[in-house]
Amino acid sequence: MAPSMPSLMRVLCALGSVLLLFATLVSADAVLDLQTKGKPALLAQLAKSTTCTKDKIMVRKEWGDMSKPDRKAYIKSVLCLMNAPSKLPAGKFPGAKSRYEDFLVTHMQQTLSIHSTGNFLSWHRYFTWSYEQALRNECGYNGTQPYWDWGRWAADPESSPIFDGSDTSMSGNGKKITHAATFISPAQNGGGCVETGPFANMTVRLGPVSPMADPAPPKNPQADGFGLNARCLRRDLGPYLTKNYATTAIIASLITSYKNVGDFQTVMQGGSGVHSAAHFTIGSDPGGDFYTSPGDPAFYLLHAQIDRVWTIWQMQDLPNRMQVMSGGTQMYGGGATQKLTDSCDISNVASKVWQLKDLMSTVDGPFCYVYDSL
Ligand SMILES: [Cu+2]
Image (cartoon, rainbow, N blue to C red; front, side, top):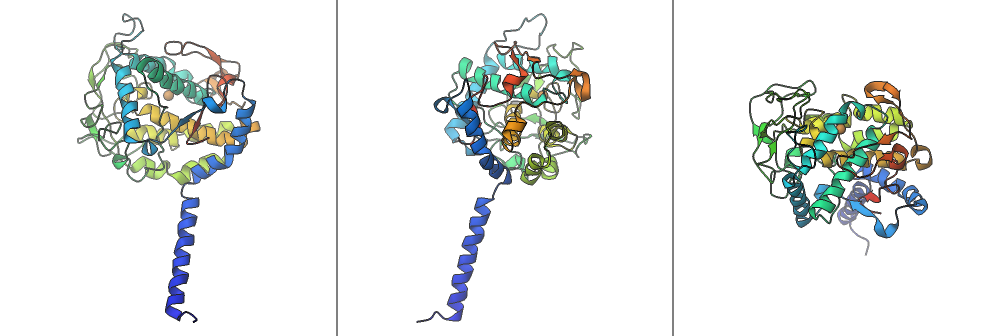
């Protein structure tokens, strides 16, 4: 018997809904699609690697895709690093009490030669990887460095599993206080001390050097910011910057719009680029000071995503985007032209000095990791 019109309509409607759902699932995340598209190139690169093999590969995941026990293991290892003694000379760096702060000192010392420079991407890749190594080798962590996909949580970062303030988050927003706007966004929903989650009682000691928080943090007793200046961790989370400058569509467009690494990294690091948007989404103190931003433990999730976006950009045309670099050795084209043979020395926190050319692939040189899946 032929179906009656209404039931035929129902069938067609149901079919339409299924197709729509399928289309949504397939292209739910344009950045993930680009990552999938680039996978064969990455596998080909891995096959040629001199140091990394499939059986050794580590897989970094988005915080929201990690199990709660895995998140807790990561948090535990970060707290361990914060409680481990500094290996730096106390006379020179009185504010560096912990191994965690040794990383912060390293970033502070090199700030002007690692941002808006040729080595921005490779330096931060090696820095984030060295931090992951310290968590594993010095604090018994068995997992990998998680990342924060700004696009996934762009509508409301505060309710994301990264910042929801639960015991499986990287702690929540700062306490809501009356405060002024910054140069990049209106005042957001916090501004005060972080009082929820695993880092609620964290003490920040180094800096400020170039603070952009309101109210301003107390001055450091040393002009270089390395003196002891104990205060609380503050944040000013809100959706303004991610909604306007770091959605999935914007990240995908960053990856697909620029063939040249100079253009790609300049747009990424510009005032309305994803890098600034993500940093000032955390904001406040020490997160809003570009010298001391690694003093907020969410920094490393943020920079793993910077690294992931670079990796996905590289994977779109790997042979032409691997050994490429653009920029100077000092900010905004200053200093000499950066060379692939320049060294990357973060010997406060890593034992080996590599040349930048060795830091260009996540599956060669010191590295052996991918994002999300192999
Ligand atoms: Cu940095």
